[in-house]
Image (cartoon, rainbow, N blue to C red; front, side):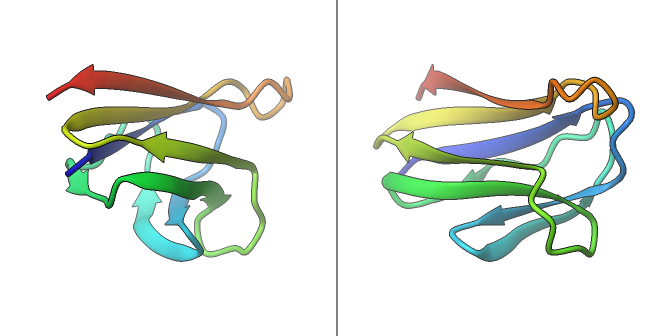
Length: 93
């Protein structure tokens, strides 16, 4: 089963909530904080990053997860510079 960890590395962004397929997966992630590894089913998942407690999507992307892989999803960039992005790094299990 794929394992996923999310990191918040946008220094001028507030605390964020991470949504996966419309459901809250992580709440109140602070700058420089990473989540624990969690299991998700293989396949495509819609990931959204929102300022904590809001319905406003700042970043969103579909992520394809494969069996027996670990993934690190990194939210980075500067809000004020409008260069926010999600980077997905895949690691062999």
